[in-house]
Length: 327
Image (cartoon, rainbow, N blue to C red; front, side):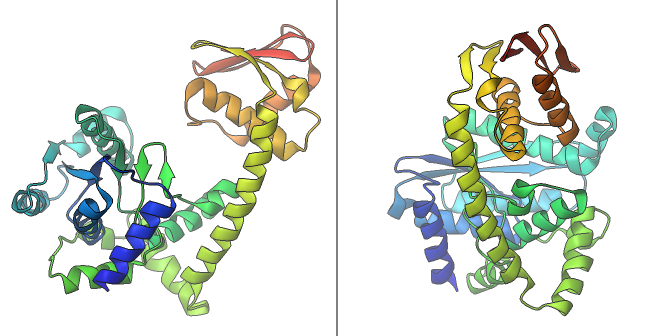
């Protein structure tokens, strides 16, 4: 199993251009089975593929075992001369101050720290240990919440600076990898508590669905790959149109000609509006389908001086016939 997983990880890296020669990789390591499989496989491949690794570990201050996990990861790194960066944060306290869930707060703290470590070390990418089962959970979670095509695709190998070399590997094979190498990873008991929606999906929904169809993971994975191809085609088509939309842009505003896309299918219209928003504010956090539809209505009406404002995020204003600005 060890050689099999190493080959899969290597192929994922090479075929998807996740890590290039001479890259420096921040590896996010909790000490659990997934992240230890990630760390160990990257450590074994780094000389062959010519890259360097740095480990980043976060103690959320939630469980008493956290200190033991830190020592476990640090010991692995020390033995192999791997640089180790560590952060301890009282997530329960911080989540109350920010009035967000511990789960959300913990995720923000982790990824902010990983990015900080990446910048401080002039690293190129951040490797996280999401596997095939994680992606199935994400797809089901997106369906439950209501999603479009992208939601049904779930996670990809690369998103901005985040890479996922284990994304095609099943959890059961990751556990075999750990056992064969006697890595003795740490186990987070909260993963076995159905207190979060994702945990409920993992512990209750997926086992039930597998009773109905034992090939659930394989079938959803196949569906995901088909939809990914379809999405890539639509994205390519959208990008060709989007190139004709922008008139001029700077750090504060984008002027665009919307006549170039308002005659397209509604699916393309919505994608281009989202691209304009993302280009302006760098993300789509808090942007819902209703906002996009309202913007399309504004553009369809095509009345000079009319505006659409979303809080302090951005404003879209019609400057003149067929020409608008987002600022």
